[in-house]
Length: 340
Image (cartoon, rainbow, N blue to C red):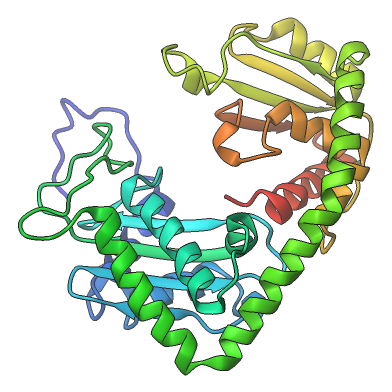
């Protein structure tokens, strides 16, 4: 690759970033092979391969549902253990990491189709709980909400096509419905998953209220969270992307970070000790465990990841065995309940 060293003096390639982009290119162009540093990147099954390569196949509730049209491709499955929703979305080959109108329409279409198929007015959160999916569409002259093209703003497909919302709803409504009729075993597993999610949501409603009240009382007296002034949701503040929460190991560590932090953009949450190992547990544990509940409240992710208060989360523990153990326990917590 040619470069002008008089302009680009200090640089380095982040291979993992380049490799991730190349993988997306081959997923979006089945049959294409790209060679990078001697490694071949290739996909035969498009978005189906994307889901299977990025997730444990044994954790999938049913085989990936793979649907393709002229200007649209979708892949859907549900996780057996994951709680959060996971979406990979693309427009004209561009990875829209922040979603947009196509992803919103896709989420809506999946819920509507499944409700119609079973003839039940299931809660949308129960239908989408643990979903792992991908969507790629082609739009004429797409409009994005930022120069980085990470969020689609277009409401129209262009030409004689209908709106993005109608196009995706029609496609998913027809082909996902057909698939479920032809694959009753998958349809049965999916319905049982939804019913279990519904049962758990209702069981959690009472616990959630008690936990909320407890968190409010704790926030009045407890110094676990030393908040900052600027948060991710402050859309008009140019420093919102700098907002950071440091999760520290005990009060002594949080004290030193608190003294040296930028109070405008850096917050500190102090752990009491080693958190609980939440692997394989239900979300009920988040509300019953005071520390997890307070951490969730500090991050403001009880209702949705879209309300996340900080753009960066830093786990700041000691560089010893105990510190490593705490880091692993926290990562387990986030992966178990808030993967996206």
